[in-house]
Image (tube, rainbow, N blue to C red):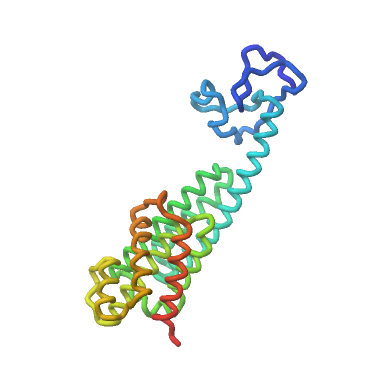
Length: 270
């Protein structure tokens, strides 16, 4: 649909003026779908409560935007799929650690239900909300486990707790390296501490690096294993201090592989 009065109008995608020609097109928008603000010219972008039903744009800009939108939707779909896997695994962990009637589990399920009941919310906002909530609950679990408030993880590991952490970390790695980093760091740190406590070492109040040194001093960790695990303390510190920009997928993947091997070696019932 060509612009009927193009004087003073600009393409809302590129910001250039719109000429009254056959190539001009108006992009019809649903009320709940306003293109991202960053695509608008600065003059329009600054307006509050922007809600356009029809915005004029060049046909070529419109086509570019449609292609970009398809890529954005595809990426969001992959993220949401991975997020739902993370939600399922987190609920399983909460059930095993705290029980099916715990307040912590109910609060997390309520967060998920709010996401399900509001399908028309901005997908990016929903994703960040659940992503942030999942990271928060996993950090909380790690803190309470370290403080000895949720029972003996050594026994529960045989029922699959450690396996759940590692499985979730592996599933989350491609789309959520932050979640994966927190999970594998929590699993590795707790596994090291439980192994040290089993060996009668006084490490209850020690941090991960101190636990590693205690195990090394007793010959319970030897090179190259000791050197490798010491390197993973850097990942742990970045993850627990939310230093996300400095976390690399390769280092998370390496930590997952090491932790999986360590748990099988030290906590296997065979």
